[in-house]
Image (cartoon, rainbow, N blue to C red; front, side):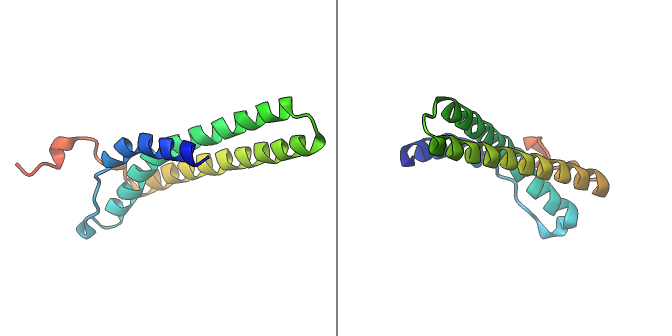
Length: 117
């Protein structure tokens, strides 16, 4: 498990280094929402993918389980996978609602806007 976690962390590091969005207090609430939105744009698809993989893995565990204890453990894993996917998609939707309510569109994707020329 530690080996899998370290491989995932090494694979995610390049994505995290691209997240160089900084918050300037003069931007106010819009800048803060943009900062959190940019973090969620990077992290949420990865977490949802991991939750789907967890869910599918537990389906396979349930299918090949021999004893009732193994089936029960796989069933609990499937339930937690569904709960995790639901929570993450709900948070994603909530952020979208907040962005549309407050009129923010998230962080700027243009690198040229951030260069001091």
